Each structure stands twice: as C-alpha cells, then as structure tokens.
Length: 312
Image (cartoon, rainbow, N blue to C red; front, side, top):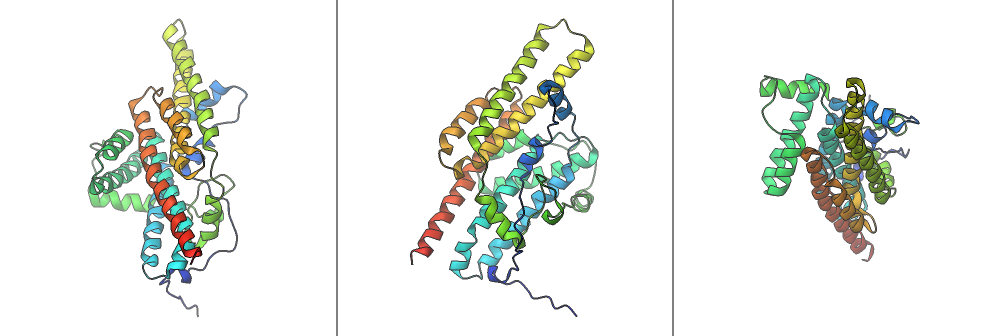
C-alpha cells in the first residue's frame, strides 16, 4: 500500500534528480519557423502555422498554480530553505509570463483556440485590474484584443471546456526544444533554467533582421504590379516575419532585466517595436516589457535575500 506524504513545506518536495531542458513558450513559437533556404517561403509557412493554443493555455494555468503552490509552501518553510528555492519561483513566473504572452501572439484558428485564449486573457485582465496598473491593463487589452467573444457560451460551460482541453504535456515526456509543464518537483531543472538565460542581444538583432524583411515585403506589396497569388504569398511572408519579430522582441524584453547589460538591449528592443505595423503587436512588446520589469525586480529581490541568508 502506497502512503502519500503531504507536502507542507518546501523541504518536503521530492525533487527529481534528472535535470531536464526547459523551453519557454516564446522560444517554442520561434522554433516553429520551418527550415528553408528561402526565408520568405519559411515566413509564409510560419504565418499559417496551427499553434497548440489550448496546450499553451494549460501551461499558463499550470505555471500559475505552481507559483501559488510555492508561495503557500514558503509560508510554512524555514527562511533559508525559501531563500535557496527563490530561483524556482522566478523561473515559474518567467515561464507563466512567456506562456501568457505567447497566447497573445498565436493566431487562433478554431473555436477552441478562441475560448482558450479568451479564458487566459480574461484572467490576466482581472489580475491586472486588481493591481491598479492602468498601463498594463491597457497594453494587455490591446495585446489580447479583449472584448466580447464571437462565440455564445455560458461562463461555467466555457470554464469546463477550457479546463478539459488545456492539458499540457509534462517535461518528462517533452522533446528537446519543446515547451512542457514543469512543476516544483523539477526544481533542479528550474534552477538550471535560470542559470542559462537567453542571449537577449542576439534576440533583438534577429528581430531587426525580421523587421527588415517585413518592411521589404511591405514595399513590394505597395509597388503593386504583382498577381494575386504572389500578393498572397507576400502578405503571408510579411505577416510571418512581423510575428517572429514580435516573438523575439517580447522574449528579449521579458528577460532583459535579469541579465547583465539588459537595459540597453531592452531600449533597443522597444525602439525596434515601433516598426511593427500592427498596434496589437506593439502592445504585446510593451506588455512584455512591463512584465519583464516586474520579474527583474523579483530576481533582484531573490538575489538580495539569498546573499543576506548566506552572510549570516
């Protein structure tokens, strides 16, 4: 007979010894760009991708639940133990934020996609309104295009449908480079994730190239004198390049406050974001920037607390 031992503090968590690679959902989107010698063809194919929005929403919910679980356990844990685990909290917050921002970027293709995206958007909107930050509320509203649902469905039915469909895969079953759900039991993997943050400057430079391509497509479209099929391909390529630039700029801004020399990189990312042709995409980067600032403060607080505990 198996006995379940209740987890009442962070010390009780049975940490998995295997350190697994952790991929955030923004990185997961960027990895969906097809490998091709023709960038324009790859951009056009990317624009038509069918993203797994329900699974991404499931991860957003899962990371939020694990964050709340950490905070609850921290209340009953020794302070040195909490200090030792703060990187886990920062990692979960990052992963949750990346999933939420990814949902703002991913184009919904089905009714299920619309419901999943709207469920997370409404949750984000409610939480932000409680914080009283009007700038973040406005940015989120534009990023998610928050408004009446195009589908008539009761709130209870919507929640039931959402929770049933948003079941993310565990990191134990994930392939390399594939976003997956990570829990406190994978705390060592979360800590390792925080030791290997992305090179934000490289993300911004890649976004600059993607914006150059999007603007080239826009000029070719404006020049006219092209057939309907070529026009459609150019439109899709332009949209794909702009989406990818948004992904990289948002991801850079999300992580910038956690890395050395991130401030200058974030400034460049914000300047580049002004070149995005859609206000919604610019709002996504703005939302990521504000979210990243909050996470950066969390990271600095974690380092301060850890240093104070070690110095005793």
